[in-house]
Length: 205
Image 1 (cartoon, rainbow, N blue to C red):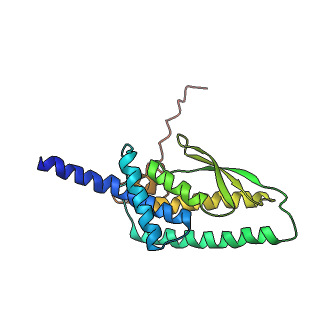
Image 2 (spheres, rainbow, N blue to C red):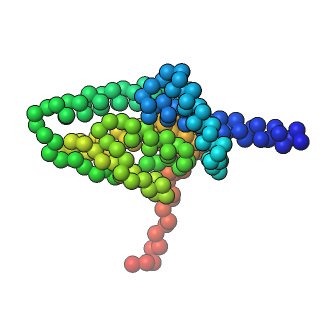
């Protein structure tokens, strides 16, 4: 009995608590308010959602980098503020928007939770929104505002990949971090290993 209770508590701390915290943060972001009343309402909604509509547990990464989380939040908030001023200028400037673009972004996160968090971070930056998500291929389609030149499209794609990389460095698995080129203990990158070439058969022509 004690073993089963301890197991349920461990599962709750690993899956339910992060889910509730994430839902509360999402609720506050949607309302644009961090007051105690907003957080309390978000907590109530999160608890009702998780208890009345239970979902299968989503496997989470065992990595958590506080430095990576702080770095991501600082950069992401800066991007949100800068993009908000940019969108406001587009709305009031005399020249109209001549062209918008649909941008295909190839993400690299293998975990569903990391992929979802990266998608949310990209979608919440003003000036673009997610049109379609291909979870199997890890792809996003972004509608980007005011992209008259090809370099603007490439800049938006690079910015999305940069945000995803910061999410991976903060919360992603060791394999995902190693795929970015970062050194991770216990993980050896195999993409840089050269395969020896087969000796050429002298008799072949």
